[in-house]
Length: 161
Image 1: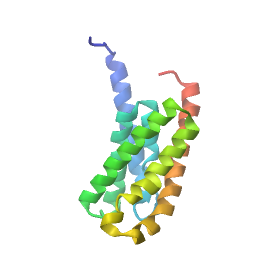
Image 2: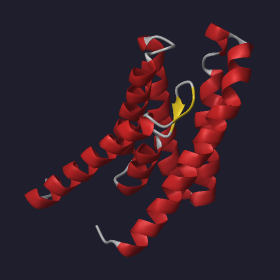
Image 3: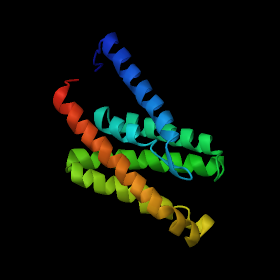
Image 4: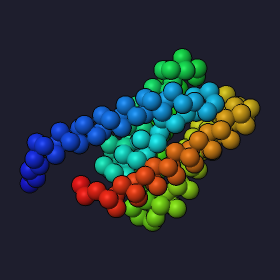
């Protein structure tokens, strides 16, 4: 069964997603530490507003913008791995928000994108890399997921999609 959607809604959705991707590019320029930046807030928001799959695309592109503006310090393959891990984080963030609540989503998003994502690179770079990156990444993750949840809550009470 094919559900018809109006072309206007498709254009509106495409425009909003493009704006979120552009906001990720701007956030990529606001660096906290190395490749840790405010690029993921639009992706987390998109995962709540449009669903986890669109959020995964936005957040992945956001990290690629950050890596690009940082000169891919971990190499292109590793930054692709990070982009995929961030897509997974956005998926579980959206899932936790819908299944539980905003508090659970913020906790899960912070833990997955902070310590868990940093652990992925321990076999390759060692525990020194983990110690160096875990605190700034966890703080930035918390800020990104919290702000995305707050903005989504504010917008969703004001606008009907």
